[in-house]
View 1 (cartoon, one colour):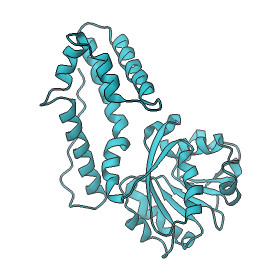
View 2 (cartoon, helix red, strand yellow):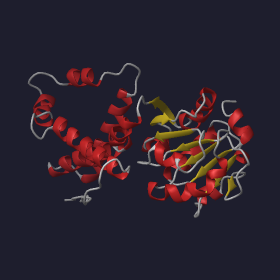
View 3 (cartoon, one colour):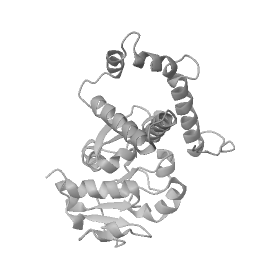
View 4 (tube, helix red, strand yellow):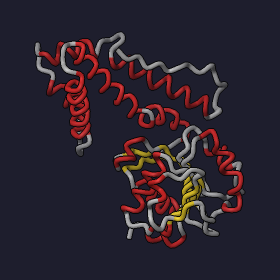
Length: 286
């Protein structure tokens, strides 16, 4: 089985929120025995407690294959502090906590501790994540193969050439689902303003986004080609696209500003630049 080597030594998870739950579900679906999974969470959910055989808040094995950190970034150092004895080379530390660079993680462990920093996104909860990762030099090739099975269980995995790219990745694919959800909300609101019943406008917007996403998920999909194919000269789509793709305040400009703002905030939270006064996100509903 794909998880045999990992299952033999055990896999530990700290934090079982949205992402942690998605991981446990994916590991079980891929054949990892429940008894090989150790979860540490101060408030285990009813769902987690219903997973027969999973070790909840029990002592970790002496030398687990991996310890996965899936907590809020604000408490990562506190969570890692008592884990130093697992460092040194045998156990891989795999963090999916946002904004915490490898250098911060390394400070909590002895030299030679293999560390992976990964950034999955919310579609992990439906088995369709795209996860990016970087690793330190202590990670061996065989450890990488096995450890990456843990995040590949709920989607695709891409290795980055440089950790400096992770703030941009976080801003693009990490935060990206929120932008897509907001776009669906915006189109539904526009349809309702023009007279559609709200529930119908919502259904049309959501199904349109979902259908377009399935097209883009096909092998060799070409977003530009799809857009051009559906935009007939002088037609209704072209009329809308002239607004949507306008040079100023169109989607290209909005996307650039959105990703730049998110990337800058990620850098601030990572301690890569002085923090500025955070802005308040205000959701305006009609």
